[in-house]
Image (cartoon, rainbow over all chains, first blue to last red; front, side, top):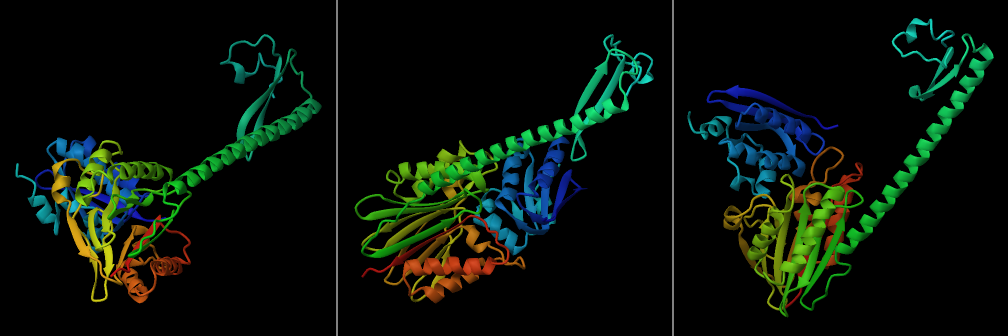
Length: 117
Length: 326
């Protein structure tokens, strides 16, 4: 059974950081979905996804981001991503995610992309 | 066993049962789980003796076995029915892929597709769009199994109907995206390459919607070609249109183009390492002087050998074009 974990923490500017760890595939996507749903239920729409410890993402995993992005953006928030390994970035890149999402090098940079208020 | 129902404190919360003086309750067990209860009553108190209990307990065992058997038969009939349906789906889907590819004087085309489960989400197809040009498509629906197979059928419908109208790969992808964005669920997408081949000049024009890059091997060079483009069904409108690019190459005698789905590059060895782009390139470089059919076979054989111990793979499709012409 593949292993996947999400850790959520808050940082300044009402930004919530989701740290993804492990192998995100069809078996483990419910864990990520629950985490997004939890943030949305609490009306937390400024989200940075830190992918430093994400080893793999399958098409089902990519689908989770697509499922939530509209809701998040409709509430003036965004999902920004950071710290991807070249291998994981390649998967997002092939599908054209960099044209649809802010994908940056560091969590700091991702957080900075949210307007200050 | 309740010898005297009226006096027994365990029945105090129940409405009075005038017909029952004594009551025998036997659980029906199957694999240590209660699947039912057998009740026996007598009008008089102390109506059951040990023989009655033994006989009814034996009867209860028989009933449990009969219920369990009936359930097993029902389940196996249901399973058989589902297997038949799945087999039918598999046959139907095989028919959605070309049974044979057309042949041309100046180039060879060879393809193979193998689903991970009974049905899959990979698709390839070829259609003659006018007297000089042939369109080919290769695509991969996100996910596996029956859900992916339905979308694959939809993609075929789109390809067959739009290819002859929108011959430019870029225009085709824009129209295909429009059709798919509104019909597929928001967490699914389709990666696809649409390409046209001029049957006499060897001009190959291609656009990519989120799909794996094309491996191009000529006598002088080899490269992965990756025109910009977002996967189909992800985002409607201008952002898709502005980002989809068209690339052209002129194929020369001996040149090879390999289109494939990520089941090839993401196949894993028993140690978890992916087959990857470099191994794919190396196989094609080694076999580039052989026929398109031999190149295709070499790739699939290498992927199988690589993943041997695991016996599991994603949907996997390979499409090889080899230019022979002048």
